[in-house]
Length: 244
Image 1 (cartoon, rainbow, N blue to C red):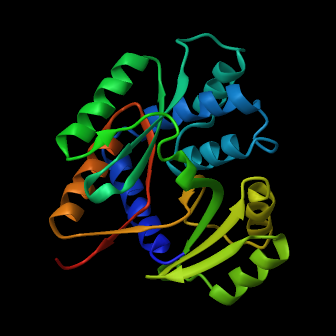
Image 2 (image 1 turned 90 degrees about the horizontal axis):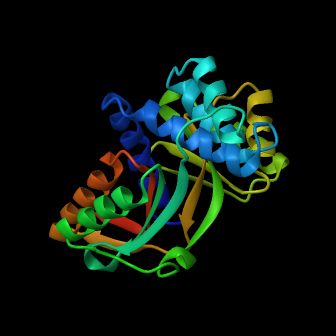
């Protein structure tokens, strides 16, 4: 688990940056639509939809906008077809990169993702080239700076059936299986604890250290990918290490 909390912290900061760019609503609407299409419109029975709706509410998206996106996904409302595509590739120093997209234009999405990899010293791989290095899990993150009590969080997490708890760099991360994610999240809500971030992620089974010039180039690759309109999430097994 070493280094994972550092990456979770980077993704937490990136989410805030993305919101400031004003793209967050467009991305969240696409994610809600796809989640509803794949798993149904009931957020209490669809972990992915619950995660997307929670993000939308945190971003102050109006509830009627969320409802329209859900209806669009379930077929109750019209609109351009949005599909989910996952791209796999390698960044500088051989780090694995998993890119999750939701798009109404497959050709545009793959062209922009491929260009980002090429521009920053990486290359787009084939299906299955890096996906086996990741596992879908629930990630529930608390910040000690917001008054999170590690002992209380650990107690609730263990009682609810969480798989792992990691604390580093002021971040407490509770990791669950995909199946147990909603139950564990509900346990925290019922206990009056609100996470800073709660979502389904792709967790790397192992990590690769990236430092120096390769780290700078890798960070630029991730930043470029995350700025693309069609990209929902970017996951990597890289741990950025200071120094040459």
